[in-house]
View (cartoon, rainbow, N blue to C red):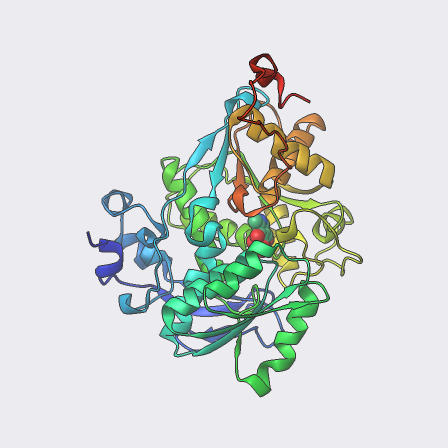
Length: 416
Ligand SMILES: Cc1ncc(COP(=O)(O)O)c(C=O)c1O
């Protein structure tokens, strides 16, 4: 069966791009990296014409995937869409764990191609790379982004180079290689990998696809916000907890909500955006608490939640802006709390989160406890990747089938 979203040509409304800090203008339909000031570029749309051409009713008739929102996205021609089946991800209630009358929902991004929300951003970035004629790309990654990049680049026939910190989860490094990228482990952190990409740019002739160093990953991540509002009947929750590394998702969602507000599809209060980090790597939390507009490099970054181990983010000011504009906050949780949160959600609700996703549940609990979120407020947690990609606690039970089984012991075997 064909998917109309991928076969129907639809109008697009991109007018230009703007520096996220200085607001100076850049032409659409050209290859861009950072702005002249070295800051991320933001894609701008003619939202008033867009809102006359498309209605919520029409969107509802289309297949439910991220390409349903085509008019809000930058790809001009449908033949440039590089797709691996970017399904709508479910919103899963976890009622046993909600603090009071406010709904607690998990948006499970682990259902996307390559098992993480990185598919949204990289699907868009690679589609735009194809549209703009880019043939060779490179990127630093903590794992999931590299996996998505490898998959979509291979699909598009684009050559890709990926650099990961040496302790990136083995599964990520292998899936990157299996999906056709050239991949290296580097004895440093993601910013060290980023330096390798930057320095190799000239001699290797590759385009730098690092987080926020090209304009279109934000547009892909924006679909998390469009989709969430759509799923809630063009409504939003009171609070969103988002595991924040480079922050593309948080920035993208905030952009989505503001665009929807501008065209009148969202009318009430926008959600409070909460940036969740790990205490071992919390540059945004520190900057937020110190009232600063940008963050400092975090020294000796460490956490079990590899995806949010990002010591320095080029979009730091945009993350802090979104958090403050939305009346949200930034919060850090420690690794013990993250792992305990993962166990609690899987044992009580049968839902296995990734450590980064579990960090959002740990942060929700902490915020309820310290009163920053009320028990009657609705909250959405982002589980950004499938829990199956990560190391799980060992299971050591065995049975000898050649001997009589002591059935009375089975019921208590896993109790600790
Ligand atoms: C599972 C997971 N959660 C969260 C993040 C952080 O995402 P962002 O760069 O949008 O802050 C990552 C990034 O690698 C990730 O892999």
